[in-house]
Image (cartoon, rainbow, N blue to C red; front, side, top):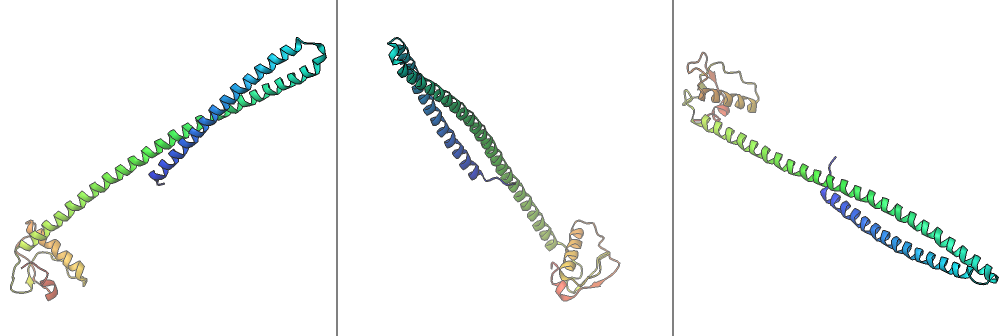
Length: 202
C-alpha cells in the first residue's frame, strides 16, 4: 500500500487545527465554569441574606434556592463537558503523533527507493560497459580466411535459421576465441551465408 506524503502532511495539519479548536473550547468551558461558580456563590450569599430577613419572604428564598441548584447542575454539566473535551484532545494528539510517524516512515521508503534506483543505474552502466568491451574484443579478434566466407572453428553449432539467434551464437564463439578457450585448429569448415559473413569483424 503506497502512502502519499503530501496527503499525510495535510492530515497532520488538519489534526493540529482540530487540537487548536478543542483547546479553545476547553478555555471557553473553563471560563464558563468560573462564571457559573461565581454565579453560584452570589446565589448562595443572596440565599443567606434572605434567610436572615423576615419569614415573610420565604417564597423568594425558595426561588433563589432553586436558582442556586440550577446553577450548580449547570456547573457540573460544564465540568463534565470540559473533561470530555480534554479526553478528545488527548486522542487527537495521539492520532497526530501516529500520522507524523507514518509520514517519517513514508519519507524513509522514498529515500530507500531513490538509493535502490541509483544502484540499479550503476549496475546497468557496468553491464553496458562490459558489453562494449566484448564488442571491441570481437572487432579486434583474428578470423581465418578473411578473403572468403569460410570460417574454421571447433564445435560450431549448426545454423537454426533465425538470424538474430545465429548471430548471437557467432558472437559468443568469437568471445571464446578472444579468451583463448578454443583451439585455432578446427575439425570442420562451415560455409556462411553472405548476410552472416558480413556481420563478422574484418
